[in-house]
Image 1 (cartoon, rainbow, N blue to C red):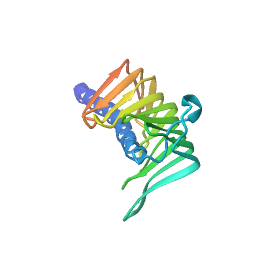
Image 2 (cartoon, one colour):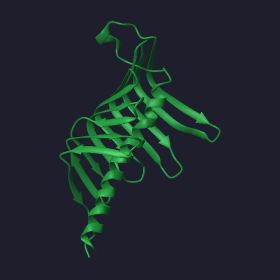
Image 3 (cartoon, helix red, strand yellow):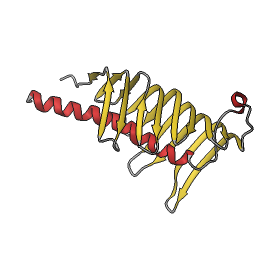
Image 4 (cartoon, rainbow, N blue to C red):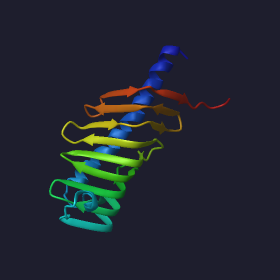
Length: 184
């Protein structure tokens, strides 16, 4: 195999691995925009407009349920929202994508995820980090802490990453890639 072709193919797989993270988080922004959930009242002293416990939010269309958000506690205030122990699932034609975190918060059209953030694209690629944020207006995903992205073909370790322009541009810092090969 030509080495240049091999390197281009591996770079493409790395880009695709980071792209799935962007595609998994973007739909959560739409669900949290529904103004059903938000932030903890103890820290701010404000009373929530809506408070939910052990809840399930499902988005249903003509084909059935396609998005589900589960949470242990959710708060909605006038200016921000928060969900604890969030688990988001989106059904696609080929797979079910999931995103989970200890805490999700929305302020000014920016979603913040923290604590054991895990994205699974449903096709074998999984991303783990402790902190990420998604800006709805610019459709920019920032992975702001160390992360590990895995699939059957590679494992990517990195310090942080930014994905914008609908996944067409990706910037990553201090990336290390371990390629998984078959023994012959």
